Length: 163
Length: 163
Image (cartoon, helix red, strand yellow):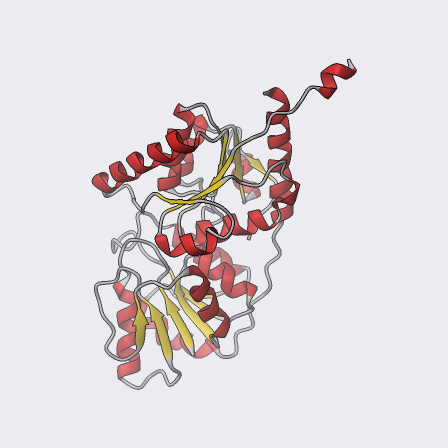
């Protein structure tokens, strides 16, 4: 019995990411509180170079670019850069506050067996974000920051708001 | 200094920048304004502006500002609240192709109803609302980032054991 409990826990390679702007503000709030995580994040993913400087003090930063559902070509660019990041780093877990570019990163990571933690942005008050709904079937933990959205969506948890 | 910003979102929000610029030109706003105009096509004639600040500088401008006029992006709202700055938000509208959906309208309504921000929904009401900024006392927001981080700690620890 004891041996089972003593079994060595594996080390996780954690990727954290967020789009520039509000998504990043929320991720930074989360990271301020993340001392109790078993490991600190191994690397960071964001969408604009303007954030790279601030994050690079903490670890390697990858910039995958911005996209939205109206620009297919940009979205393809984000997909290619996301796959590159995942193949290079092979994270065990991706933790993100969105948005669409990070959803694409999550899907890329899932292809390579990573677990996905999605925290839907606080800006989604009346319904889950479109990006969130897109990745939801592939997530291992899905959190919302509004209690009401947890009550009306299956497999969505509310534990509090980041901001 | 009033800090005017449309955030980092990769779609222009000319309506807000243009309205303020014209108001400054007409002598309707006395205080100095500094703007981050993002990817706006409209280039201000009557105030200093940049397209995009580094994240650290962005926070600094928010800290130094007497008040903030912004799109209804949650990032800017959060930082403004952190610094206890009176903020007036005008949401980007899907109908006007300023965003892919109307979540900023929901954000503005929710945060306005909670007393955190002043909000304006029509360009013509902007000047009237700006006058209220000087006396507006934003209500502090209480969030639970530690609870969210702890939920993720639990998830990560389970993942380490499951292997």
